[in-house]
Image (cartoon, rainbow, N blue to C red; front, side, top):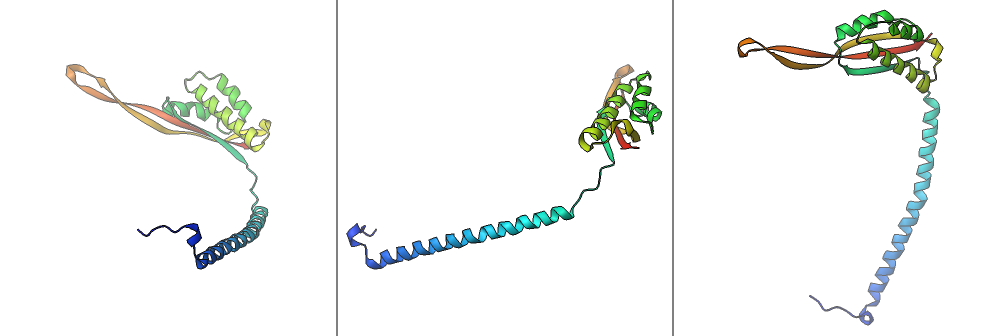
Length: 169
């Protein structure tokens, strides 16, 4: 390794090079600072222009989905068929008098869809009706039943997904 120079031994050329480097750094920083705000202003203006062009259409429906309800879809469809196309208040009144196991789950989903419509989309609660309601297959749990002589037979425990769409009249 070369021996280190003392401060007094630093040449004039090295000092000049350091000063030139410092000046170029200062000038590059200044140009960057000048360029950045002009770019930012144009981006903001472009965003404002885009926002003016893009207007969302008014929302006409709201929905709610209950997934993997531990009732078979066939039993849920018996309850759902009673309220399809009815007003929300009328449907809840009908379901209050139905003696089926799936009734409580269907009531929850209808209330949730109505709450979504009123709270999220500012729809009038008194004018809401059930435009679509259906139950589809959900999770299928496969189990077995022990049988005679050490054998077993299969069993499928079905779940259902309930979807409710609500609109305003």
